Image 1: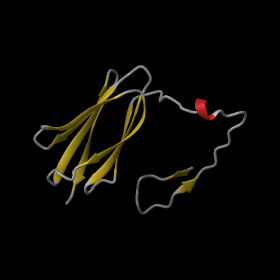
Image 2: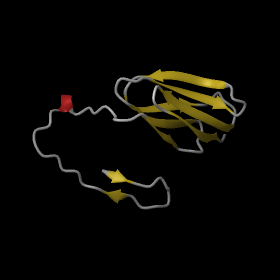
Image 3: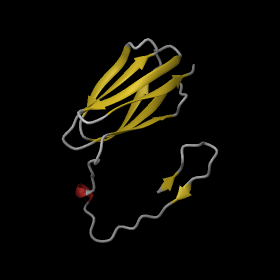
Length: 116
């Protein structure tokens, strides 16, 4: 496992994870304990970025992307699990965009920049 702090100029740290006991590949999926918006990468981007988030068990979450005027550009519903949603903005104008992850127990908004 390689971990970094999100700064492109920093060196990654290496972490070793040891699992004891029998591991069944069909049972290794873990549902997140909490719904969390982790951010997007790269940011700024052109033309695609990946928005990362978790949705806890027994919830659904709506990911909404807005332009600077507050108009909805894209909206999708996701079930429980770990998600990497790739947003392709090839047909969208350059500028600042916001994305919100909202579920029954969580709501957070973050900013991203599309540079063409």
